[in-house]
Image 1 (cartoon, one colour):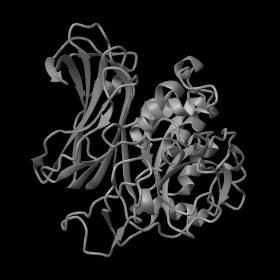
Image 2: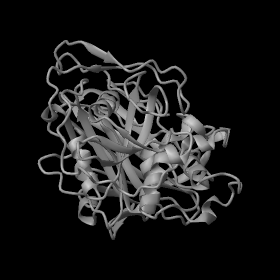
Image 3: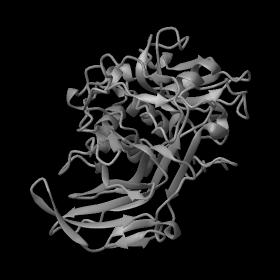
Image 4: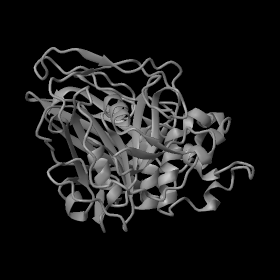
Length: 429
């Protein structure tokens, strides 16, 4: 399972008083950490157009050059460590740092959450830091650290930023929470141990700013993907029960890396077996154990950090990032383009008919298709075996437990053969 981060109440200047909605009782957090119950402002309007979401991506050489370069070079769509712009200390050891800073970006509305994603290569004793700051009402916040991340398992225990609840902002695992800012800057720092020749680099950085209502509103009408079901392989997180307690222990804790692995399997992009040769031969789907190890957040104490999952998947598949979708109609556009959607949901007893578990305070599954009537075909990793992973959920039920729990939070992972469809008037991918 995965805790679902719900936005804090907006400031009075941004939202009129209204009933608030609490997330389900978290009980035992599924993949570690003690998520506290927080509230989302319940905006009066609940239509699709009232879901304010804007994603900004830096992906091409031209886009990277729009930012400020300090010790980095832009090469073939990547920012690459070139020279030390500064020397800093981490864990008592010196590291050379170079960094890229985005221009100020304004989503066009006052946002109360921001989630950053990235795709990076961190060879040797090197890692990346992701930081953000914002503006609102003329004031500029301090830089907040969102993550220290590396792809390997030596030299650094990857982790999300601490709470940092100064100047009206805070960090909730992978989510930057604000009282309602109007613009932001994203910073990607590339660090290598002083004296080494590592060349860390990044080929994608995204920032998804949002302000969304608490209610899902009316169920969306079926869209373009009726009758389309993608051939996504089925893996069960429960077959890993008891595996590697140091990385969450499998079972209910591994819905996120299991879902991510299903999508990678669909693209024939699972890691080379040599990368998980350390997993015992009797472990089913050993690449899921590898994914759990590679996505584990040592600060959050779990594998459910959203951008850690897409950062793991992106170099394998091609691209990957976290965003929010406004309804299942947008998920249908992606499925029609051949892109499965990993969705973050939470539900109580009786709220999701046919689910393999009775309730969850935070769970990830893969939307793989749609029936002709609009109901949703999913690969739900909470099934006890692979055979039971494929499920069909009622459209209205799944849409509600997705939009009201996580605001439509989704992983979009795709390869070159499956480019993102045009979002039309929307701006969330």
